[in-house]
Amino acid sequence: MTMNEANKNRPYDPLKVTPPGSVIGVLGGGQLGRMLALAGKAMGYRFVTLDPTPDAPCGQVADRQIVAAYDDAAAARTLAEEADVITYEFENVDAGVTELLMRESYVPQGSELLYTTQHRLREKRAIEAAGVKVAPYAEVASAAELREAVERFGTPCVLKTATGGYDGKGQWVIRSLDEVEEAFETLSRAKTELVLEQFIRFEREISVIAARSPRGEVKAFPPAENIHVNNILHLSIVPARAPEGVLKRAEEMALQIAEKLDVIGLIAVEMFLTSDGELFVNELAPRPHNSGHYTMEACRTSQFEQHLRAVCNLPLGDPSLLVPVVMVNVLGEHVAPLLEWIQNPESQSAVPGVTAKLHLYGKEEAKAGRKMGHVNLLADRAENAFRWIELSGVWESK
Ligand code: AMP
Image 1 (cartoon, rainbow, N blue to C red):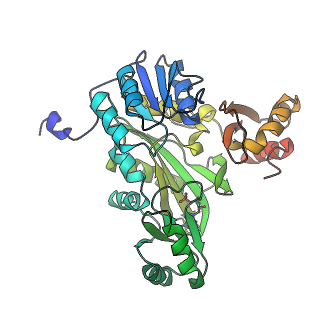
Image 2 (image 1 turned 90 degrees about the vertical axis):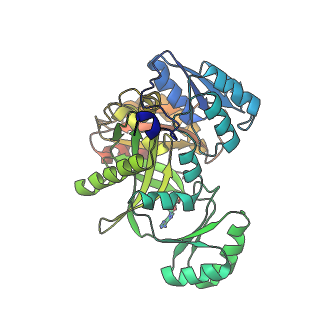
Image 3 (image 1 turned 180 degrees about the vertical axis):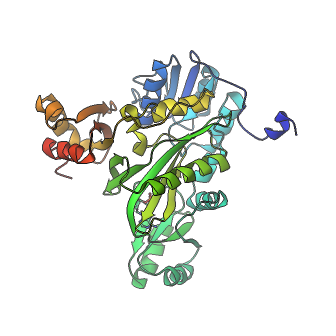
């Protein structure tokens, strides 16, 4: 088989490199795009982003923003004309737009992985086909099927919509058989398939971000331990507090998924770790991920630089950890107390050995629950970072 035949159906070219100086197009202008552009501009790339909100977080640091809806074909065509390579920073990319961009520009990530990860059932099947475990699940098409599956898995178990859910939305934890009808009826309104999952009594939630480039190189970042509050990520702790062997296995699972799913760029793999050391994959995200923000100062290469290296087919950077770190998310309600705290001289010296690195995304409206920024706390020990968080008082009212 020749190289051309082997790559006939692939959206990427293993030999094509997009060198610094080129223009990178980013579909979506949120914080992930912003941090991609900040990393890429340091390397000499130029950026054009497409987002409907004027002065979007990425638009503020990109060379240019096209202000238009994500499914605006004329705007997508302009993006294709201006960019040498295109990536995306969110997952619900319109299928027609992706097709147009692939036809008229270069989108090495393609559309197949987006298609897979936009739908929980397709995603679970793909993870299993890659030889990696997910929590036991069943597709349920009626209340009767749901009842049968709940009886099989036992309670509690979790009913989820196949599409459209995020940050815990589109989910129902079924605690007794009495809830079956109501849960089915409520989630059915989403007009998508439903999937029932066994409830995993996890000890920790961890995530691994892996990168793969067209030349076939793969690398994984150290696993993060993630703590959610109200279904929104609150803390990522690195190194994750789990045995070495478990962390190694988690990295291997992410690398296996990156290779088997023919990933280009980043893939974030969220997992549950049980008390007997078993790992189940919960979700994938084919993009930079909130649980990888810790890499910005704590690793030799950040997830954003790594994503660009992968998409541009440069050699991947060394992902290894330089210093232990705790990332804490800044939501709308945290902004005012945080701004006050960082002006206090004590904020940099409150806990010896802790250095706080502030990141704000440039969003205008600080709505409660909205991700506005994060702080990376470089610390010799995680306890010291927790102490800093406590002393700041910023996250008390959560
Ligand atoms: P998801 O939208 O699938 O990421 O789920 C949001 C959160 O709900 C996860 O981070 C877990 O804390 C919890 N969760 C989801 N699925 C399960 C499950 N099968 N077992 C236990 N907890 C779950």
